[in-house]
Amino acid sequence: MAGVRQFDEDEAFAQALDVFWRKGYRATSMIDLADATGVQRGSLYNAYGDKEEIFLRVFDRYTSRFVADARKALDKPDLHDALNAFFDFAIRSILRGSPARGCLSTKTAIETDSESPFGKCSITSPPSCSKPSSPKALPRNSPCRPARPPTSLSR
Image (cartoon, rainbow, N blue to C red; front, top):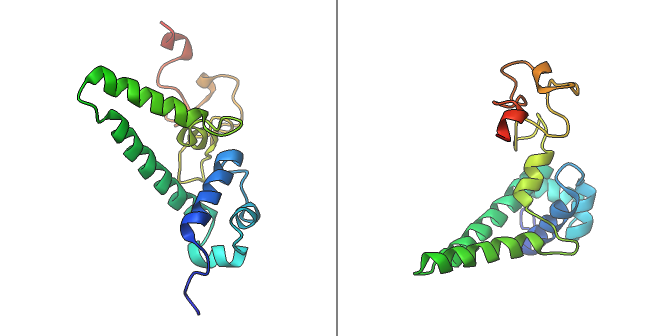
C-alpha cells in the first residue's frame, strides 16, 4: 500500500532516540538510524525527509515526556517534597543508561553548529571563529563571544 507506513513509528523513534543519545546528532547517520530502527533508509527519507526532521520529532517526544514526568514529580502539596522528588527524577534521568547518557538537551546544545537549527554556536567549532586564541579575538557581535569575560564570571 502506497503511503502507509510499514513500521511502528513509536518503536522506531524510541530506537532513534537511543542512537542520537549515544552518538550525538552530528555523529549519527541515516545508516545508523536505519540499522537501529530496522527501517530502510529510503523509507525513512520518504517518511521524514532527512535526519534533522527525524531528530526534531524524536526530540519533541523526548521533551514532552520529560516535562510530563517532571510535572508529575513536582505535583506534591509540600514544596520540600516536590523539590526533592524533582531532583531525584532529574538525577535518575541523567544517570539512566550504561554508561550514563546525561542530558540529551545539553548534549545536543553543546555539539550543534552554525548550520544546525539547534543553535547559532558550537562550543567545539563556533561559526566564523577559526579557533581564536581568546574571546577578544571574536567580533564584538559574534554569538560565540561571551557577554562578560570568563574571569569576571567567577567573582
